[in-house]
Structure formats: structure tokens, C-alpha cells
Length: 232
Image (cartoon, rainbow, N blue to C red; front, side, top):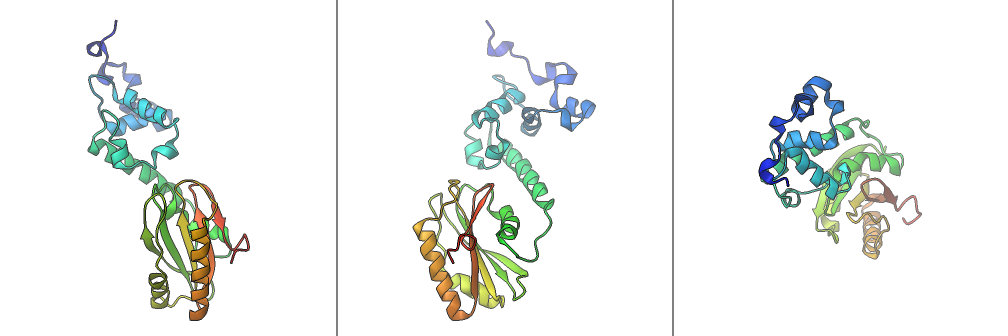
């Protein structure tokens, strides 16, 4: 019967089976997801190799890297063998990958439709496990002036203060505003609170001659547009 003492370590594997050596000899594309994560982890324990630990983590999330990329340091550290330093290494690598993916998307400078809003703001609102509320400020030609984080909250929601929103718009001489926030639950349907807030901000904007052009709700892969649905 095999015991923990009998388990072999990565150093005792055949060279072609070690993740670092495999990357050097066969190229990065030859490595599995678990092997790449094992390189980030660096070392396992007497109980399991870094690759086995990586496989265990991936298995917990159905081998879905997207789910892994949304974990916090605290959540990753719950896995036996993953301390804070290893968790930070994994999260940093996942974030670099996300930023590279986003950098491949052409920079949005003018808003012409809801898809432009999604492409502009998904880098800020994807992969979050809490809600954040952002505004996009536009000039009269619908060119983007700036984006502003208004508030962040828990999984259940966040509070958007109209005074803060319109103060930012006035200070930046914005002609119009686009509202955006995410639903960590993955549910695209706007809540009654979302609907009430949108109407409140629309009405306030009319008084200040600052149009609220849209309110876009984000999940990781899709969005809901109030303007597209005729709710403005």
C-alpha cells in the first residue's frame, strides 16, 4: 500500500514530465493548465506534488479557468497547500492574462451603441465577486471623456449616490452619462432597485441638461442595456 512517504516528488520525475523542463524543451503550448499553475505554485508538499495540487484546485472548479480567475486570495488560501504567497502568484498571473486579453480589444473612444459600452467597461466589471457602479462621461459628440468608479458593495448590491454622479459630470463638463454596474450572480435581469435608480438619475439629468443615455448591467460574458430594451 502506497504511503505519503512513498509518493514521488517532481524532482524525481523523468525530465520530460517536469513542468519547467517540459516548457523549456517542448514549449509553453505543450503544458496543461495544471502544469502551468504548478509552475506558479513552485512546490507541493510531502502529501502531493504541485501538479497534483493544481489538478485538485482545477477539479474543484470543473477545470474552468474563468472561475479560477474570479477567486480572491482568501478563497484560494482555503486549499491545503496554498498559502497567501502562492495564492497571490496565481491571482497575479490570472490578472495578467485578463489584461492581455483586454488589450487585444481596440480602445473605444466613441460610443455608438451598447456593444461599445460593453467593450469599454468589461475590463473593469468582469470577474468581480462584488458589485461595482461606474459611470462613463461623454462630450456632445459621444466621445469618451472618462470613466469613474462611484461605489462598490457586496454580492447583493451597491449604492449609487446621484450627488456624486452629477458632481463628477459637472466637474468634467460632460454632456451625457452612461451608467453601468455588474451582477456577480450572473443574472442579467434588472432589479426593481435598478429600474428606480435609472429613472431617478434620468429625471435628475434632465434638470441639469445632462442626458443619461443608457444603463448597462454586466455579467462576465454578456450585458443588458436599458436603452436597447426601451426602458429609458
